[in-house]
Length: 143
Image (cartoon, rainbow, N blue to C red):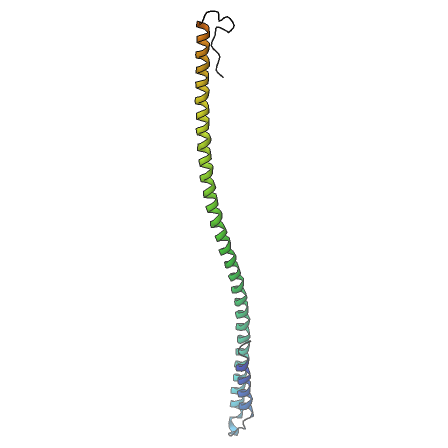
């Protein structure tokens, strides 16, 4: 982890300061209290530093997970775009086929009506012709 060199440097400064002989004997109690206060502050700073390192590691892990999720979502979005284009194309094809079927049904109905008219016309000619007793006198019903 980064920052280990800083900790080592801080510890050396602390040890150097603690090993310096006290030049003013009357300041022992005050300097001891100051040293204790500095020592406590250093411990708290180290605890905070470790907490920040853990939070940073957790944040980096979360960032990596989110990056993977973003990449997955981008890939899914690309696939969705391709599928939407395919659906549009197939919908157009279905509409064209529906129109083609409709036209073929209309053509079939037209042919059926023409065939019916032709049969009725032939039946009418047969009825008018002498000796046409082989056929029914009524026209053929709709097919």
